[in-house]
Length: 350
Image (tube, rainbow, N blue to C red; front, side, top):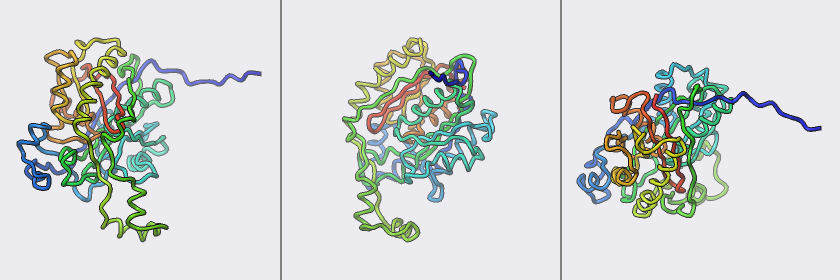
């Protein structure tokens, strides 16, 4: 006998109900960081477009940043934490393998017993999270999903590194995704290229770091804490020219595929929100994508810096808050980062 399982009733579409954001409390100007990298404000501005980067107070945790952004998005959405069916957090700077940051955030918000899990897709993480939230809602598995991209990149830098450290900031961006009578999140076009894993990388594994500093077997957790506080942890590096060439070659193709998947043309796009990697990259992409001359472009990087998984929702939040973009605008959002993970969607702004 063949057993047929019952499925949830599919939903016609999903939408982003609201976005929220939280940035590090301190705006750090270029002049404050140029000494260790033997650089200048002019050099950083010309090469990246960054004037300041937001960095969190020492006592502000990654959970604090995530909670502030989530609470902002929930307040704007009118959805209570208790009504969330799932919480998805995209991050590479939650330095505990388990439990997932999403579970801690769910408890902090009062969203228990919502499903909760983390995504590690670097700067593409938020778009990966939106893809999964869209699928959960349309499948009837969840009615409301919270997606948070959050990073404390200042915990992951070497101040003397000239490849990426001066780009990085701290922050969190959040979106509440829910049901819609018509699709307002287009199909996700995504993928990865692991052959370029060395283009953006961690200087050494955390396991090597523990073994080298502590030997084996490692002490108990309580005994470990004080010793770890005195250590120099792994940091982030990138091969800038390799990343730049890959992005300029591949992201315009991804953009075209993403727009076509939504049944639109480049001329239909009102707002372009790329990962806030580097202003030069954004400007170069605009030259090759065929978007309208009056397209609104997310440029949050100038003040906030590169916040990895948080950068797209933070740039979107700023555009809406400052009135540069408005509800109902058609936005193309594209993330790309380490492992050369990438993803894009066309969304209708809340």
